[in-house]
Image (cartoon, rainbow, N blue to C red):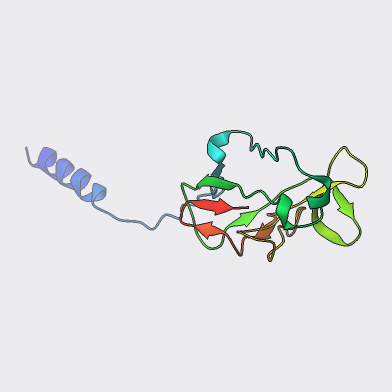
Length: 137
């Protein structure tokens, strides 16, 4: 009877011993992308534009786009890719009509260009036109 009690006592004591164990965990932190315009194509209808209004703000169309970001931290960045018209203006999207492009701007008006291209990989920081969950371009 004494042996049995001693054996059980030693067994229970060995379970109570603590030891430092190093655990390595590896993985990638993934920030989910924002959903733009509820995942739908963005359609901008210019209607009929008088050729005399092509090179001024009378042909301007403002489009408000919904943006849903499940995780947001810091500034909003946007990347719009496509061929530019050239001529030093990196916010003019080329069209299928020779010498005819669409100038893109942030916010209302034509004071803040929306630069096309990859920028730093995430595009370019949005600096105008933000309104809680929507942006105006």
